[in-house]
Image (cartoon, rainbow, N blue to C red; front, side):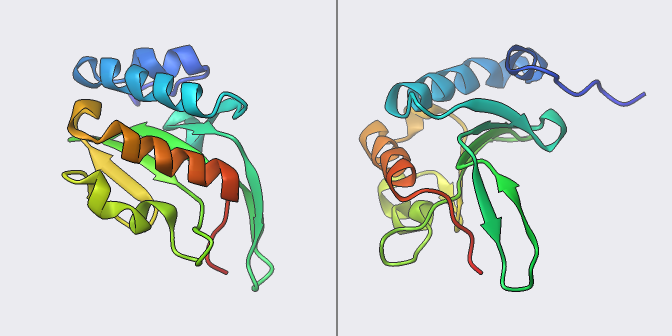
Length: 139
C-alpha cells in the first residue's frame, strides 16, 4: 500500500522522516522569517512545501504555475529549490554555490543534510534575491 500523501502543511512535517523533521522545521522557520509574505502551499502531491507562486510560459506555449521556493525531504538530504534568476540571468542558487558550500548546488537546487552546515547569511541572501527577482525558468 502506498504511503498517504500529506494534505496540509502540518501533515507535510509529520510525514517527513523523524531524522529530517527538525531540519525541515528549521528551514521553514528561516524562510518564513526572511520572506514572511510568501504563502506556504503543498505542491507535487504533497512532496514539496512551496513558498510563493509564479506563472511561467515557455516559447513552446507550455505554461503553468510553480512555487518560487520549495522545500523537500529526500532520501539522504533536504532539497531547497530556488526558482529565480539573478539580474544577469543565472539561477540564483547556482550563482551563490560557492558561498553555500558544503551543500551540493545545481542550477536551482540546494541539497544539504543540516541547516547548521550552511552559512545562514548566504542562504538568507539567496532567499531575499529570489523574492526580489521573482520566479523564472529558462524559456
